[in-house]
Image 1 (cartoon, rainbow, N blue to C red):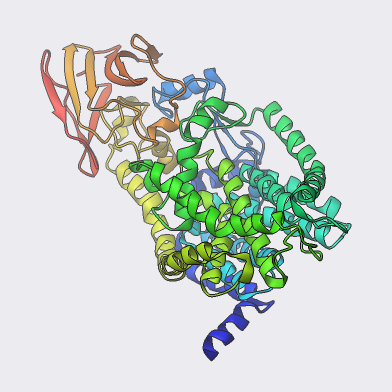
Image 2 (image 1 turned 90 degrees about the vertical axis):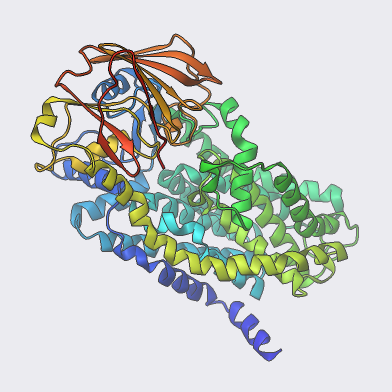
Length: 620
């Protein structure tokens, strides 16, 4: 049909990436009204201190929640800034000076113009989409398939959080720089562009300075070495493919040197993650990381292809086994088999890097699909260092969007002899689903999810904080929360009330427990309560951020804090099931102000009388 031919020509046009970027920015434009949210307030506060000459630390240290200092963590637990179950040696400190610099400029120059900050994030997103478009045209050839993959990337609703939350801009900056690294490296290796030999590693340094997620560049570079390293005269077939791949891998030594030097400095300066159940550093805690890697990769990979959203994993982890196996079989059949058939062919390649059985655009598409899939799978590994969430898919989606477009292209007849009959049948079955998910549902969801970020991120937290006492006597009292929803973060109380003279902060905050489940509370004596949460504490990724499964509690463990002591009386799989809390004063002492979560807010609470027990219902 003529309109399809015209559409294909539009998608294949060299300027199409700019059009896709414009469409993506327009769909994400509700971010301009999102304002500041949670961490944004903290960043503005810290940078404001630097501007006034009241530094608390390096100006780039915006991404530090715990320094791995047991004494400092204990002091925070005494005040209640961190909950009692926090691992004293917890480390959550990330080195991102390049991204921090983008915040420093705006918080120093226009601290109250949130719309301008969001505009900068949208500009980074536009640059990222254009970069992806250039890269896919190099990988897949200047075809409509590359243009379709670029469009899918621009429309992906998984990008809502990095685009719509200012504090998450580091993901956009690092992804943009990684894509630039890949374009430069491809030009250097396949076009002989000599400046790329040093420019690529230099940009990689900046990418690592923007965010740890940039490590994914090595996965794509490795895939490039295996698939796209150009052939020399007479090199074809499986044995000679190994020579090309080896040559491509050896050419990556500057990137490896940069990576090793960066990691050495990163560790020496005390950055990284350790002790958390949400952030897992493969270098510091390899066993804990390996134990969750398959499921996290499955959650992220399936979310990139279609559904369910990776964020759902945090609430109710499904059984991934069958879905994971099915996904692997399908992708191997549709994408990798054509590439491998070409490599195994013994006929002269005519410069097509071993695809002797395939010619022209078919060869480009097969190789491009293979490098996109291998790179995306390898990019899943660093992405799995965090509890699965769609925001971790920016770099995975570079290859993922290309793979989705290739499957649709094969179903439409692209690829020719590179795809066997079985591959084409599978592609025809998958194409309608992928087209609906990525071409219809994603663009409908992207503006809605960006617009919803502000209430989802902050309004619930703000409503919870506003339901807490705020009268002047609170400043001389300990605020005791018997049970809080896991989504309530202790530090949010200070973050939202800091410097607000109309709302008093408590002398100290005491969160006895945090769970969605009901809790049985028993009064032992004048100063002691015993709490028995149904299913135990630390069973969700929100509270596990402060202590991971690799650091379980044991019966008899005690946490002695200023004014109270927590003792673990019972555990199940390292999770506290019976907790005894003893205060230094009677529970009715006026220095203690009691509240509990009820429905959607905190309400006053009266400890049970001596010897009695009561049940607190679970919270939503």
